[in-house]
Image 1 (cartoon, rainbow, N blue to C red):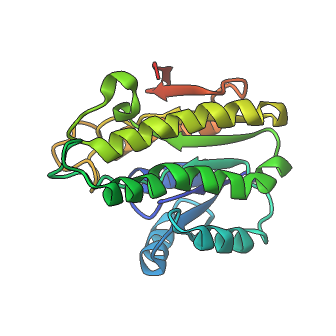
Image 2: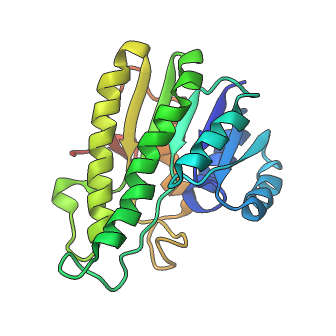
Length: 229
């Protein structure tokens, strides 16, 4: 049985990705900041398959280290999905956003994904070939940057750069690293007017975890097709 760790998996795209992969026979480890919310998600996801809970706040180095210790009993990680992210840019623009808000968004969206990958790398190396999937956004494309979503866009732009660098560094270890854009999805973050369902948003992540060619690495995908950085 393959094991996947999904950060921010107690709701939204992460939760749906977890549900689909559990149904496909994965041992799904869901990362959640809140024990209460994580346990609630775990109970629901266990209807689909084997699910474990890991308390994990990707913006906190101590929490990441604690999660690594907790994961040691499982020991092998076939797929890491860096899904956790925030969108705190309502009511601000590149002209008004504070340094503090920029820093907070990068701590979760960019630095969190990088540190989690670094921390869980020993487990990924045990499962070679393995995969790292990074949930990015079209807002992180150079052509998609918006002055009205400054910290989100720039954190995802930098996250795409992290993807390219990780792919280069991990190629020799046969660990594929790719970013994907779920599109505008009906979640708490995306809002009720978004055109895509959560299942549609999770589809590319599930494909990258299960069916995509292992030789695909250092690329950006939407709807299973490569898109420009």
